Image 1 (cartoon, helix red, strand yellow):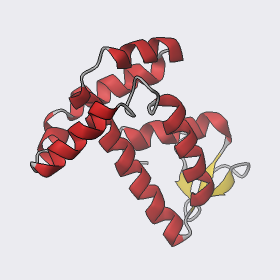
Image 2 (cartoon, helix red, strand yellow; image 1 turned 90 degrees about the vertical axis):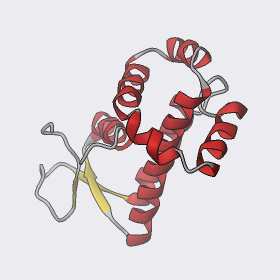
Image 3 (cartoon, one colour; image 1 turned 30 degrees about the vertical axis):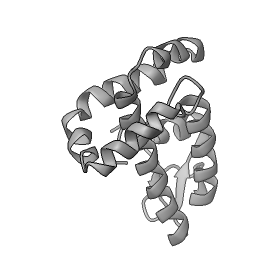
Length: 144
């Protein structure tokens, strides 16, 4: 884990870090997710929504989530590291099953943040770069 990993307010961190409420982080998360993944050619496609419903209906989402964890991590990392134009192109060439697994990650991160909001959690985050790193760890389901 890097030195810039966000910490809860119960942990020590640099004195310049500003605690953000979970609500503030959640709002920034939604903007990040919408701008990065929920574009027309991406995870907001109708076939992706249908695939998630199909997988949930057959109780296959959890199995596929684990079976394709590494490939999903690699694809998300590649998407985050490219330009928005390239990302849109990659989304348009990606099958609905792969995008459904990314949307599942988004939903998991959102549920986690909702829990933090309900608990009134504050997280120390220093700057935009650290916030983006926090979101990357959240969508990759890495411990923070």
